[in-house]
Length: 200
Image 1: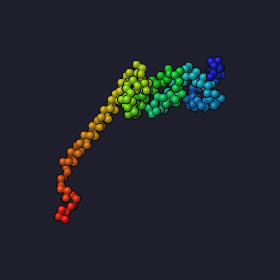
Image 2: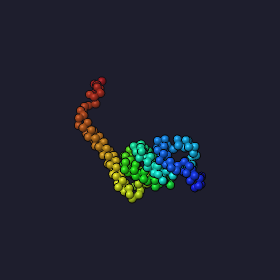
Image 3: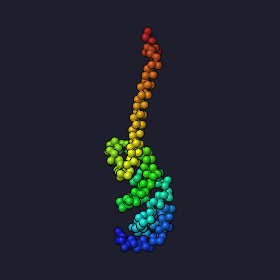
Image 4: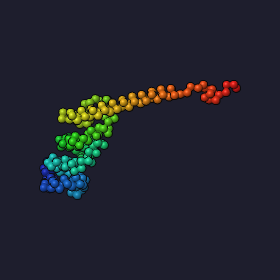
């Protein structure tokens, strides 16, 4: 693990005065290309990455450069996958991540689209584990997300009602169909139906 002095030396050598250029390269090429070109180890890159994230909003600029990609990724795979893609799973990135979450999940409505796409799974979680657990999974436990939570609950309610309506509609349809067939059926003796000659 690099010491604070080592980190500062790496930042001074590779990042000071080059923040904008590094940010643009990160957005266009990604970290692997930069590490390779500069001959950096993972630890050295991490020092530069943290410097750019905390001091120059690297994550915000990256997400805002391709909002459709990050929104679609969130909708399809969820929040943990998005954090993995951006390599910000560690708790030290929570504050920076919250800003991104607010942009992608709340402003761009990705969370609601994600819940709609995975509503069956989340409905089962809600029924089995309760609302607090679902809020925790969706990472909307904070009070500021209360309005968003109400929208999620509305989606869950809609899903529940749709399921019940479909079940009732199906049952009702079977009853109507059975009743109609019973009324339309021509009752004939078995001997006529099967051509049985009782005389033999």
